[in-house]
Image (tube, rainbow, N blue to C red; front, side):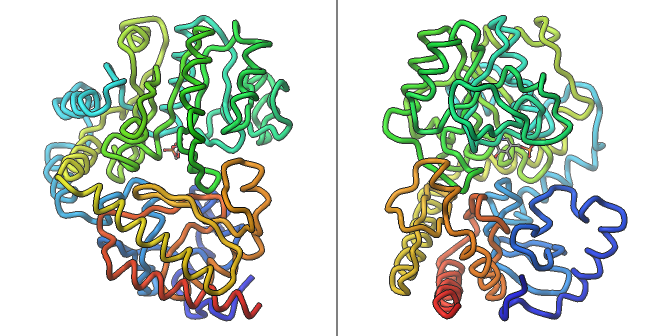
Length: 438
Ligand SMILES: *Cc1c(COP(=O)(O)O)cnc(C)c1O
């Protein structure tokens, strides 16, 4: 769908997409970039600076994608660029241990109390995949519980959304995933403790772990109901199963330590990614020493990586984390996010648009809905996606780059200030006004 607001002069992006389609499936290296659900031409990005990205046709956008989370400092932050330049002059990779890995591991262990030991990998997918393998190896059990609508990367055993609710085996959500790979993946409903309890009553002795995004950010964005996460902890304790927090998205974003800075509940294992790489391909998983020491070479559970702990990735991540330790930066990020989202909600209300939002520090989700509160996957799925698409294109046309899907969270960076927030709210007024005329 091309709206009247879609700009027609995307010459370079159109040409590049054409070329890309000839040699890359769908023209993209990750599916949501293709704009399939919103249609139109994906912007090929030439560069970024601070809160802005600039496309190949020279258009500037206020960026609320932030590379899907990593760019919490904004683009091309001088400290990160400098760290990468310095590290790369000493070679890009060794495949041998280096000091930067130790500094990174010490920092993660110091910042996140539940992490006593940590291992670096190259993506969030690797982190969750290995955390599951480790939980299975440690407990000697095969089954895992995940939540419908939670995304943990694209490893076979986690690629299940299984709409049929508790007590059923998962069915793969992609061809190519053998049924056997997901036969031990059980799915429950986020924010519904009973759905989890029911699975454990039947099969608790066989369940190695629950993996959860404590704040889901892959079905737009949800917030945990009071004591939901605590309830998961109690169930895991009762059955000697492990609790895995997938904080690939929320780590170092929703607070200086992620969800664990907002809650007293401690997981056994945590997966990280996105922000800790500062824009480089990085993931990590860590937790209790007795569990982590089951990993090769200390223990029998195998895991390895040619580029894991890569010095450039460590340098970019460390420079990012160092900036984030500066006093007051999360207070400002929280304030900017609140100003933005409360402003958007007020404008939606003034135009009579049925609209809701969830948000926390640096992260938000929009919903075109009449419902007062969105806490469940089924509610997210029943939102009016017919309104999201024109909204998205109107925002894009007004210079505001949102995720091209109603089911992705949005991200505010430390580089977003009052000027960007105000400009975004003006874009929102145009977009909502446009919706009322459809
Ligand atoms: C992005 C994400 C992943 C996957 O990370 P990749 O680096 O894309 O493999 C896993 N879990 C969550 C919660 C994520 O948001």
